[in-house]
Every structure is written in structure tokens, then in C-alpha cells.
Amino acid sequence: MGVRCLFAQQRFFFLMIGIMMPTFFFTFPSKPQLKLTHHGPGSTPMSSSWTQSQGHGGGGGGMNHRRVGMRVPLGLKGKVSRILVTGGAGFVGSHLVDRLIERGDHVIVIDNHFTGRKENVLHHVGNPRFELIRHDVVEPIMLEVDQIYHLACPASPTNVMGTLNMLGLAKRVGARFLLTSTSEVYGVRSCYDEGKRTAETLTMDYHRGHGMQVRIARIFNTYGPRMCIDDGRVVSNFVAQALRKEPLTVYGDGKQTRSFQYVSDLVEGLIRLMEGDHVGPFNLGNPGEFTMLELAKVVQETIDPNAKIEFKPNTEDDPHKRKPDISKAKELLGWEPTVSLHDGLPRMVDDFRQRIFGDHEKETGKTNAVA
Ligand SMILES: O=c1ccn([C@@H]2O[C@H](COP(=O)(O)OP(=O)(O)O[C@H]3OC[C@@H](O)[C@H](O)[C@H]3O)[C@@H](O)[C@H]2O)c(=O)[nH]1
Image 1 (cartoon, rainbow, N blue to C red):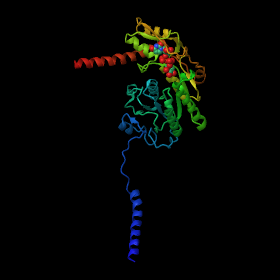
Image 2: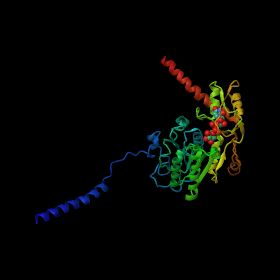
Image 3: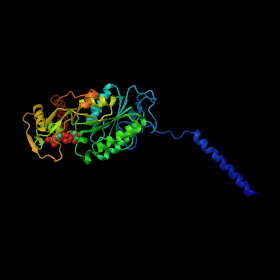
Image 4: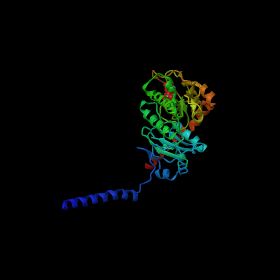
């Protein structure tokens, strides 16, 4: 009897606990959470408080970052576009961002700053329509946007993950996706450019398999301000060498040709492609063809007529000629380059001069101060 009573009491006790536990959890709010914008693993917003406070319209109308699986609320499309530019702190990306901001769009840049530089977009910081997130696209991220310009995709097989993540994001939020591929897909197959071919294939698979809106651009040699000074490309090499009073290094006999596109022409092409109705792939490049010796001459004329030329051995697989056929872009996008090499080169020289000697002068100043 005593034992039964004990069981009865215990049953009652456990019953009470069973009722109280859920009541407690539903009645009392859980510990208040720090409401920081969550971008995904490994991401660092440039300024989280800034990111937080600028709701870009708030109430679901801005670039608020949502849980994976949520869709862009209907009715927002057709207004100001919310645009993600991956690699937006880089050479081409930052010029694209300038144009989009100028147009009135909301722009989110994600960049891991491997080759992109914060300085390239610093002039937009503080603008409520701009946000910079330090993030590597190989990690997933959730952002509500209408369009994605995927520039953070070096020609390397390892970066297929980045493209997959961005395609996944575009699919989830119903964004239009533009892939920047490269003229190198036309070259001899190598491990280096295989990543871009794979990215194109994946993009087309998402288009066909999931009905996603995609665009593909194949970018040819491009130059302009904010180009990496020491990335080894011929235009940046020649300009930096001429400014530093070093000889211009011409590889091989210098008779190989390239066609050089000024960055603003490329940006115009990318925007037209994104806004147009055609998937592509479209070649975006300037068909004006120059030998490397001719390019060296233009650099001499622009910077230093006394600059010397030094011939160096070329690599075996260097393409002898590269010239884009842009007839498709002309016809379907109404696009063609407008800036010649003679006009574009001086515009980039000012930027290079400032970056090379500006930094140098700072360094010298520092040294003097210490001495
Ligand atoms: O100092 C230099 C550098 C390069 N060159 C030559 O200049 C030509 C152009 O070389 P770059 O490295 O600038 O450009 P490439 O055409 O080889 O490819 C580059 O542009 C197109 C993109 O799609 C590629 O990803 C990129 O590597 C080559 O023939 C190269 O041998 C020189 O003569 N001197």
C-alpha cells in the first residue's frame, strides 16, 4: 500500500514536470539573441554594425539576409535591383560596382580579398546602398538578391565549388545569374582553364534543369585603372615597367597578337548581357588587334619614348593570336567597344603612377621620419 502510494505520488510528480516544462519554454522567451547579420561560415562583414543598421528599406524590402529556403518577397522585383557582385573588390568587379551604384541599385560585394583590394570600393563605404562582405565563395552564403554577377571565379578547377554555391543561391532566391568565363576556354585544354569550362557547363545545367535565368560572358584581355600591378599581364607589366624606368619585357619575338579591351567597355557589355534576353555565351572583348611590339610602342608613346625593350623567352603554349569575334554581342546585345587602346591607356597610367609612386613616397617619408 505504502509502495503503491509512493508510485502514485511519483507519477503525479512526473506528470507535473511534464506539464510545466513545455509551459515554461513557451511562456518565457529564450535568452535574447544578439541580432547580427549572419552571412555564412567564414564571412566577415566590413562593419557589422553598419551592415545591421542599414536595413536598405527594412521590412523585407531591403537586402536583409534570410534563412536558407526563403524566397524574395513578390512585388519587390522591378523596383531597385539588389545585386550581388562576387569578386566585387577586384579590378573588373569594382568598376562594375561603380556603374551599378551610379545607376541607383543596391549592391552587395563579397570578396575574399585574395586579389581584390578594399581600396577599390572604399569610396562606397558609408553609402546605404552598398555593403562589403569579406567572404570566400567556396563557403555557402545566404543573401536575398535579384541578380548575381559571379566574377570571383579564377580560372582554376578548385573554384567550381564557388560557382556551385552561387548557382545554388541564385536558384534559392530566384536571382538571375551571370557567369564571367574566359576567352581561354577556346584555347588548348589545360587544367588551368578547365574550371571555367566546368563553370559554364554547370551554369547551363542549372538553366536547363531548373529553368534558372543565366547569362554567360567570355571575357577577353581587359585593362584599365585598378588592375593588379604585379599580376604578370602584359599591359600592367609594360605600364609599370615604363613608369619605373625599367625595360619593357617582350616575350618571344613580340609578334603574337592580343586585342585589349578597356574595362568600361567590358562593364557595359556585362550589364547589357545581364539585362538582355539572351543566355550566351557572348564574347566580350575589343577586336582591335595589336602585336606585343605594337603595344610596347603605344606604351612608349604614352609614358616614356626612351623606354627600352628587352626580349625574353616565351612559354611554349602561348597563343600566337587572340582576337574576339563579337558579332553575336553586336547583334543581340547591341554592344561593341568604344574605347581604343590609344584613349584607354593614358587613363590607366594615372592610376598606376599614383599607386606606384604614391606608395613609394609614403614609404620614403616614413623612412626619413625614422632617420
Ligand atoms: O611582360 C610580358 C607579359 C606578357 N607578354 C606576352 O603578352 C601576351 C599577353 O599576355 P597576358 O598574360 O597579358 O595575357 P594572356 O592573353 O596570356 O591571358 C590573359 O588574358 C586573357 C584571360 O582570359 C587570361 O585568363 C589571362 O591569363 C602573351 O603573348 C605574353 O607572352 C609579354 O610579352 N611580356
